[in-house]
Length: 254
Ligand SMILES: C[S@@+](CC[C@H](N)C(=O)[O-])C[C@H]1O[C@@H](n2cnc3c(N)ncnc32)[C@H](O)[C@@H]1O
Image 1 (cartoon, protein in one colour):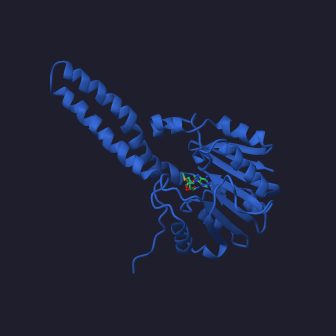
Image 2: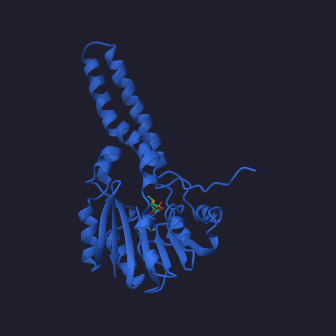
Image 3: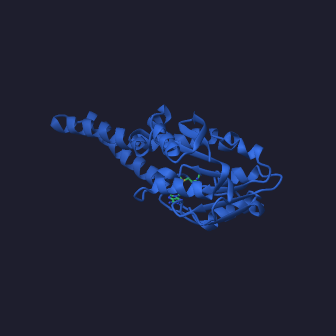
């Protein structure tokens, strides 16, 4: 019988397809430009190069990022609170299909529980849905240690001071409401126990990986300082900040 595999999906898969298709049109225009003469030649060569820079660069870059970069990042190995706290109550904000949440849940060998909330936007990950993450947790054999539900980062559906550890991986840049990131951080502070740990990871615009793999799309992301200031403004104590494979990873404490 064929082994059942979890479906985590590719981030922004539809965008990757569109970018590569448009980029290939640019490549076609560029190649065609070589074989004709006159002003059209210049137009085709110049527009071909421009379209390839804008679309093909991030289109191919994002494919390479999924194939070679994402697998290298072990966020769980950076979460020292997982070793420190014996039976932690953990919240993964913006859990999506569970790529990070399920890795965290797998470390809970001696008790503890992971809760995941998300608005399950399909823009970020096609196939993103509550039933997908629940199914992935079942396939990965962590269904007993996990509870997933619908919930937004700007109004977290849990009581004050109810978690030892909170994680938000590649989520806050997607919270677009006015002051949404401030509201999300306030909510994370509210539901975190005093002394509890918050792990934030975000694609860092000033890293070479962001520009190299993301091209022009890199400008959709913030620099590391932005997240650092956001945490400090909300009185989080930053314990560690590392840049790994283009991601700024913060360990902060309430
Ligand atoms: C790039 S995905 C990251 C998913 C997951 N954290 C991971 O590590 O694979 C971003 C996720 O943030 C979610 N999201 C966006 N805005 C949100 C909000 N206001 N509240 C909760 N989740 C949100 C999206 O639905 C999506 O699942």
